[in-house]
Length: 458
Image (cartoon, rainbow, N blue to C red):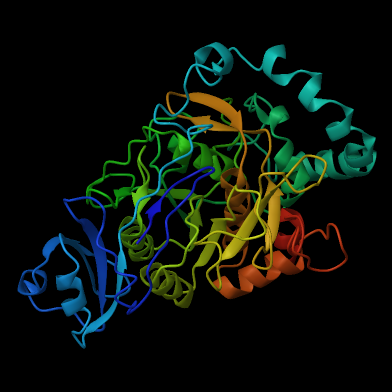
């Protein structure tokens, strides 16, 4: 069972169901290692102790499973002979790449208050070197897309953009910096619906700053205790985001619009943060628990900007359960720049999302290949970070929530859609890029939120 991580990460191998003895390596550490044991049926009480193992925790997920600690190989070999054991896989660790999401989250080299405070967006961060004619010239942003046919009173009048949240007195000051929204035709889609907070999107990540002024209005709330999420690592409601990654992802998906603060998210829906990682990453046991938590609380879209490079029997079962329940499952393709899409994006039925540039090219860091489904904006993306602040960065982590937000709008517009139907429409309505038809560079093409909503109408 691999540790989970965010941004550009590496991972160790996963040992799958009923692996041969040679694969169940005794760890180099003299203190042993943790493993996941999956069962066909719930194990007997004190099963781990009876097999010479120490139980670390049970996993609330699609299959009965335990995390156990083994100090030697022999008990594992004996345990795998139990006919109730479906698989044993090691709890191996990942570590985050400090190039963008290090342990401090957003350190002073580029993400502190001197560059990204409320006064900001100055020339040091937003000058012509990054926002010049190559990305914003008439070839893509001219009158055919921005003239009065789409931006006049028929699209911005009181029927859809009035004082309830979208009128002129309450503009979002960072909107002009959000090139990705125009690229996916979100403003045109908002003429149909900008979301009615009717769909819950579960963000499985590093938590969320629940006090951020651009996210407060979008938070899911637990009716029983008023909490705003779950921590799958600790079993509590503490979703504090010491890293910043989950807060960044959530802002792309659902930052409040028309509140005179910061930016606008793709969809005005409910965000349920489920914390499955911290500054040291997370485990697949955490993610499996998190996936079940999303389903238990009515989430219709699961958004995962995290990855490992190897498959896991535990996560395969967890994601299959989510898909069977009708959820839309979206995951980042990974940032190694290889032709292999990472897990969990590679699992069947999961929508794998790569990152595109403002000029509609594949970002150099984005993974691609036969399992890639879509690309979405993933370079120079502006979003929320803890402390009522904003930052600009990129990655497939940033691309995935554009797709998750679009899926939520589709379900808001037409609640009768199944998860499989949403995925099919997203692919069918994507803007073809590169070689005609599906290809391994762009998948089915670039996300087109407006076209997806047209395809989703009842």
